Image (tube, rainbow, N blue to C red; front, side, top):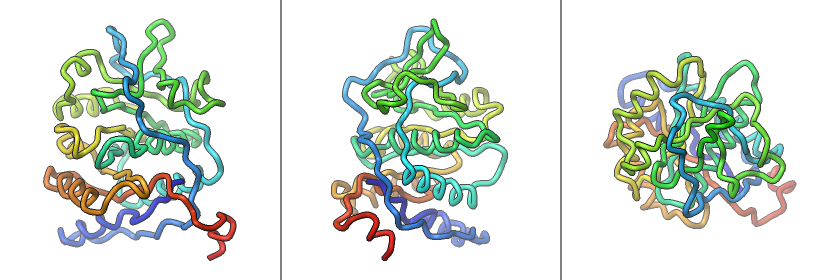
Length: 265
């Protein structure tokens, strides 16, 4: 189960500290959606030797239910209240691996893609364990089938493009900030949102430096697994690198009472 919480609270505090007007922030609603298992599997697919240099349509997505759509729509509203401009770049990361970053980032991207008036793009920035590969014959980006929803595994996700990591990045094993900056400057033309699926902050030396190149960062943490000191340390590393931490998403939360009762209290 997933619940968005602390939405943009840290961003509001940082703006006040800088003498800037704080954005109007509405607390996230309490209903908690079901989220499919989103831990990035070991041995995830690698990109082909001739990767695309520009985003291409994505094949394979996640099955979305009403709760996920509602929560991700609420997250979009909160992010839009803080990040202004024709294009927003948001990095999703977790303190440690296996907390569902790929699932949450793709859910958010798919919900954005339901709005035909905008163009979202997924960028896989986890070069050591990528979740996306390329199919040169079809000019498509492919989501790892172990992550795809059963109803969307072989389908093109409408209005959503993706950019898997290049073979050069895969060989190097590190996504340098300069490379990301170049991609954001050249490969994202015409897109309204760029959603980056990033590596764990405490396990990857490039995570914090990548975070400094985007407009904002959302931390994904798993309920019952991520300890507060771990989350605090990850957030501190991101801020020291110059990243703008917008808030956090609590993933896989288990309700102790039935959800229909939870919604009433």
